[in-house]
Every structure is written in C-alpha cells, then in structure tokens.
Amino acid sequence: MKRAIAAVLLAASQLTIAAQRPPLADSFELQVTWAPAPITIAGTAQLVYELHVSSFAAGPLELERIDVIDESGHRHVASLAGDDLKQAIGRPDLPAKGGDPARILPGVRAIVYLSIPAAGLAGHRLQHVLAYRSVNGESAIVQGGEFTAGSAKPIVLGPPLRGGPWAAIYSAAWARGHRRVLYAVNGKVHIPGRFAIDWIKLDNAGKHARGDGSRPADWYGYGEQVLAVADATVADAKDDMDEPKRVTESNKVALEKASGNYVALDLGQGRYAFYEHLEPGSIRVKAGEKVKRGQVIGLLGYTGNTTGPHLHLHVSDGNTPLDAEGLPYAFHHYEMLGTFASPQAFEDGQPWLAPAGGSKQRADELPAPFSVVTFPTN
Image 1: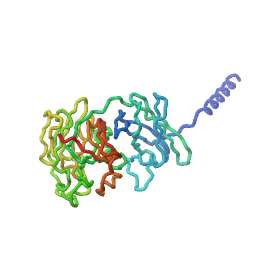
Image 2: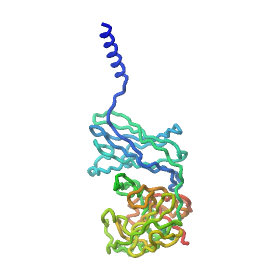
Image 3: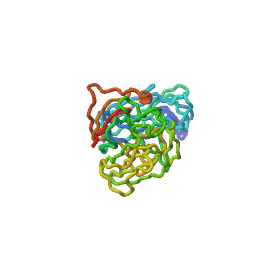
C-alpha cells in the first residue's frame, strides 16, 4: 500500500512539474559568424555585420521583428520590423521572384544584414531577440546570436586613386551586391566584400562614360593609375586575363577568375588590400616586392566579373580574394562633393546632389554609398 501511495504521489508531482514547463518548439538557430568592430561611415559610427537565421521548424515561420540588446549596458540598441526587416533579409536559397523574404521554410538559412549605431558598444556583449509567427498564426520569440563587439580601430589608408570625381558604388540592399555575396569555398562561409567599394570615375555632369560606353576606353576611369594605399608588401599579383572588347551588362567568368587581374597588398597584422579588375599588362609589381604609399601598382581596367571598368577595392583577413572575411577600413582624407539621390540616378547619369554648404573635407572614415569624392592629387 505504501508503495502504491508513493507511486501516485510521484506521478502527481511529475504532472505538476510538467504543467509548469513552458511549451517548446523547434524554430531558429541564430548565429553571428563574424564579430564586428565599429566603423565610421559618413560621420556615423556603426557596427556592420550579419545575423544568420536557420530554420529547424517543421513548417514555415515568418520573421516579424529583430531587436538588438546590449547585455553589457542593459539597454536596447536597435530594431528592425516590417519593410525595413524584409529589405535587410538576404536569401541564399534564391526564393521565387515576388516571394516574401521573411517567410522561412524548413531547412532554409536567411541572412539579416545589420548596420546598427555603435556608440559605446566596443567590448560589449550583444544578443538578438527575434519575434516570429508560425504557420498556424501563433507568435513566439527566440533569443541568440550573441557576440562581443570588437574594439580594434579600422586601418586608415591612403587614396587608391588620384583626383576625381569618383563615385563610391556599393549598397547593402543590393541582392547581388558585394555585401550579399557569400562564398563557401573551403568549408566555411565568408563575405570578402563586406566593405568593398567599386570606384567609378565621372565627369562633372555625373556621367561615367562617353557616348554609349560600349567600349572600355569610353569610360572615364579606364586606364587611370591605381595607387598603393599604404607602405606594404605585395602578397600576390595576377595579370593573366584578357579584356573583352565590348562592355556588356555582365561579363561572366569562372568563379576563380571573378577578380580579373588583381594585386593583393599585405598591410600587416593579418590585413590584405585587394585591387581587382585591372587592365591587362598594366600591373607594375610582383609578389614579395615592397611598395610605398602612393606608388603606382597598375591601371584601372575591365577584367573578371564586372559590368564596366572600375576599381574594386576591399580589405580582408586573408591572402585570397574569396576565402577571407571582409574587414573595415577608412581613408585618411578625401573631399566629399555630394551624393546621388538613388542608384538609379547614378545609372541614368544624373547630376549628384551637393551637400548643404558645399563640398566638405572628410578624414578617417568611409564615404556613404553612392557618394562622390575627390582624392588628393599628390
């Protein structure tokens, strides 16, 4: 009898404990695979990074909101919801055109591209709270993606080109822009072009080419001298690709040739500067050679995977164009002439918009997307 009573009491106790447990459901794994440090872009300190959101649910889940929390400072840092959240979501699975990027199917990974205010966050522990809705309409949250914001300052570089005007072409919102192109070539996914800029020379009216721009030499930047951004050692130099005679909408090549003719400079402390799409036969340096800041290392061209002649420049943590993480950097000095109203305004060759009060001198920062700048000429 005593054993029977004890068994009943144990079962009742277990039921009580079970009733107190919150329901569990498979949902998302949250990861930040690369921890950022603050970078100043157009005068504002930011943390630029990606939150990887992978679904392990049995059915579709819809992302509704992401909050970034500073655990060290016990404060809310940033939020994304609605259209802003949907525009920040990248989908490596390439869903059907017109599909909802926030609707994540089982087994699918989405990438949320974040740029949040960085003031006071260096060395702080951050995490994410993700609100979502299940297929039956139930709301839930999941927390994760913790990381510690770095405190290292970006490397400050000299000008990669002379004079101008030069347009800084990049955008975190482009589906196939540098920041949204991921490479998993050696067992780990990387974003080498996280802070890459394509530099395109303009005339004073905002156009980037003469006539219809169908020949590489029609573009104003074609053949411009490309400069070493620091005293450095040449880590690699490739000059074995020919150049198309005509400029097409997309000059597609094999993945290993996407960079075209390029030079990589070892800047020290595990940082490498990559110059891509250089003109055939123009590279003036070789691996192992020492270069000085401002030294001519090649000419701007039209090789590799590119839609037109320009200089692609980025800094990464490895001596390879693709198997490395893109690192933040800044330019020591440039003059800000203005900004295009939109990517389409640049494409259409419309004039850029001058800042209030005229051009401005900027130091130790990156320009904003679609800014127009001039670099020192000496």
